[in-house]
Image (cartoon, rainbow, N blue to C red):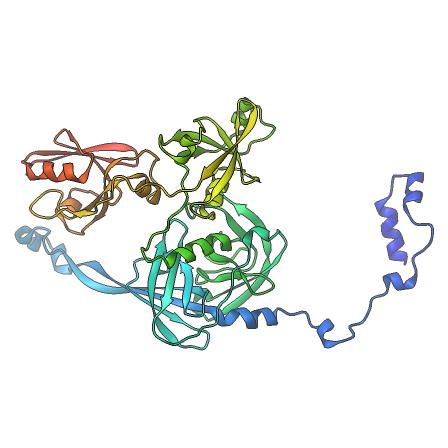
Length: 479
């Protein structure tokens, strides 16, 4: 009692007579402050064991292997005598090496559908999953989505049914909720860590195109990638994908992809085309700075400014104009462009949503039907072969759909390089994946059909103009 009285006095010190009125004149009874002893083992034992027993069997280790060509220098060719006769030819010898990566995953259906991170299985040619009962099984890749850093696998063979976890609603969680992270950190074996939700809707992380991460202080380390973040009922709240660290180990700042985003990607894996189709507004969006907010007459910075419109896109067709500020979607406030991107990416195609936007000091509302970006013109992927300077490239026609898929500017059009063969004439010219072909011998390249006509009539010297990172680069091939 003496300690409690001293605390109350300290709290109200300096309030004078008013403090006396705030303190109950009747002293509390002993029972109000009595510390009760546990009446049972259940009260004595606070444990996450029931949740772990439910969730852990559905968490798997994911192994990815791929064969790569590695250049190796022969010690003989560092000798000037050999270089005099052979030059630098043969100086680099190629040999095959196997590269492996290790991560985690979680089974989300009884027939063996597995979610993991894209970066865990990227470029993998052989995928295996190890179950909690130590079985190692082959798996195939159903879908890889680099933009969300998610991948969907299917366990091969008739070994099921498998234990699996259901998704929770990641929009219903709050900061402070208890969570568990399950995975295989550093390859030491399945490990469970606990923590809380530290923050929601983290958008400045720079990991994926859709930045709306759950932040947690549950320890996440290398090898945890692709494993689940589960709630107190054992349902999936997110997929652990990254940490903030200066040492490579956990500093209590980990990031998970929300389950509502994961659910959308998983559902589209069953469509069979290997691509994720997302709603598209046909606009480029810009953040609102404090200066812009003052100019628009806003009380605080929020929303997403439309900086560019596609003329036949959903927003333009609904009457929204460049310079309008989107402030809500279906009644949910839009804090920034990343918030709007996330809300769209977790919405259903063909659905109709209500967008609120600010114009001339007023808020207006309009209905938008959610459609995917058009594949117009068709991408028409084509491999350039033969005795040509551009031989060895895989090209495609740019459309709104492909531009969105590759995170290119809204109105990107023309022909883009999707891949370049190692050691090909095109690679020796310095062409790389993502370059856009602009001109060949002063002829503008708009479509692959036009490119093929130009290449059929080509003669040295050849002047090639490409666009890379917004800059035009000019190359001349003389022979």
